[in-house]
Length: 406
Image (cartoon, rainbow, N blue to C red; front, side, top):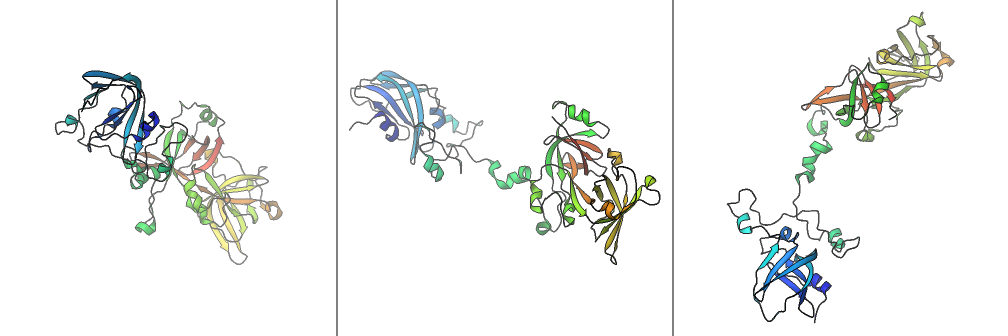
């Protein structure tokens, strides 16, 4: 029973080192199947892939076949190349026995390639295959490969390239994914657990207008790191809505407001409020604050950044008195004062709607030959969100000065 050319392509499998001709009802060869292996050790898949011409000696005459198209047929027991050729009459008149085949471009000389004299190449005789990637067969055309089910079921023919070390979780985590140590793992806290971001660093005295007006080519964008200020969670109420599970997903350094109190009894500047450099804030209840903490006092009459000097709790009337330095960020360009109309001692209803925040400030680092250095007293242009952040003399982000409209 004769077979069609499509049946020949799909089902007539040549053995290693063998080619099979498809001859029509006359003596015209219209297709050729060739095994991808010369023998059990030598794979010629890559040599057969670029073929354009094939010459066979048949009946003492050289027949030259010109290849029209080619496709790889993959099966469970092996693969072979199918070539459609321009019809060529071979007028067979009996058995020809074994014939030699000359193909163009010619394959490599495997006798030399796999020998000990070829020091430029490996002596491997087979391509390594991948453990999770598979050959995809589009020989039948269309959108879906004909071996789609086999791929989904992990039973398809593996792709002929070896696994890379970069697919190993143990190797990529330390370089790309990041790794953390914990007290539970090693008995000590990690020295640093930082998040990378891209930014340009500028001096404090450079205006925001100049920084925002620079082109991408003018900016010296460099990789920096920042660490989240865990003191944000020292208080019961977190105004920004971040929980501890979200910390690993933070991508930009910023000062974060942490609500300290909305129950403020008094803001006292002393006997001479206009000349005051310090003040006392009395709030109801106990507060979790330490010396040098950065605060933001905000209300309908203005706002002001403050630095904590001392905190005193009076258990008898359940109040805390916070002594602060005024205009704490004046040297960084923040000149707002509370109240806007001028210093005046305030108490009772005058401060009923005011709010006191603690600022949790991320710390910014640069790197030099695997060493970390704090970025201090600088303006930082964040290349992702276009914000200009200000870092103080301890490397902490204390202000978002502006957002560039570029």
